[in-house]
Image 1 (cartoon, rainbow, N blue to C red):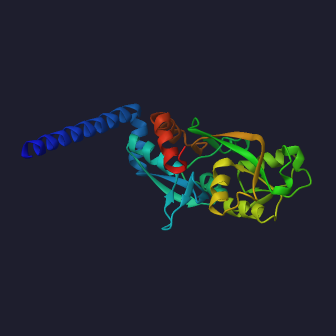
Image 2: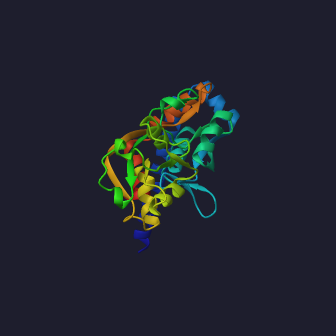
Image 3: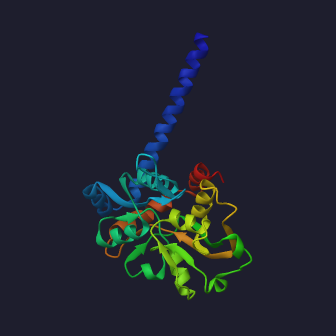
Length: 264
C-alpha cells in the first residue's frame, strides 16, 4: 500500500506540473499577442469596467448576493485570464448599460448586437456567439406567422434592446419595459399580445415562472444577433485588446460555458 501511495503522489505531482506548465505557456502566448502599448493600457487601468446584465438569464443576471453571473460573465473572465487583466462587472438595466458606455462609466459591456443605430457611438469586436430573436405571443394569437401580423396589437420589448428596434422598423409602436422579466410576465398575464425578444431569456423566464402554456413562439427568427463586445468610438486601444481576447476563447470552450448554464 505504501508503494501504491507513492505512485499516486508522483502521478498527482506530474499532473500538477503539466497543468502549471500549460497555464504558464498559455499566459506567455497571450502576452505575446499584446503590443507594448496594449500592455501599458491594461497596466494603467488595472481593471476593465464592464456593464453587465442584471436580468437576462442565463446569459447574464445577478445572484442572491447581487453578483453578476451567467454565460457572458464566464466568457469575460476566461478571456481576461488569458490576457492577464481583471474584469469588474456592474449589473444594470440594458438601457443603462448603453448610456454607461456612452458616458465612460463602462469600458465595455457583457455583450451587444452591432446594430446600425449603435455604430454611431460604438465600435465592436467580432462576434463570440449568435442568439436568435423570435416573436412570442399569447395562446389566442398562436396562429400568427410574422411581424406583419402584429399590426394593431400590443407589442412589448425592452428599452434599448434589439427587439424594440426590429418592432419599430416593422412600423409597429412597441411598449417599452425596463426589464426582460417584466416584459415576459406582461405577456404571460395577457397585458400585451406579443413580445420580440431573444430566445435564451424568454425560454428561461417562461420555465422559471411556469408560463410555458401562456407564451408561444411563432414563425422563423426575426433576427440572428451576433453578440460582440463594444467600446466607445475613441477607445481603439481596448478594441484591439478585446479583439485578441475573443480570438483566444475557442468554440469548444464556449460550448462548455453554454452547457454549464443551459445543458446543450
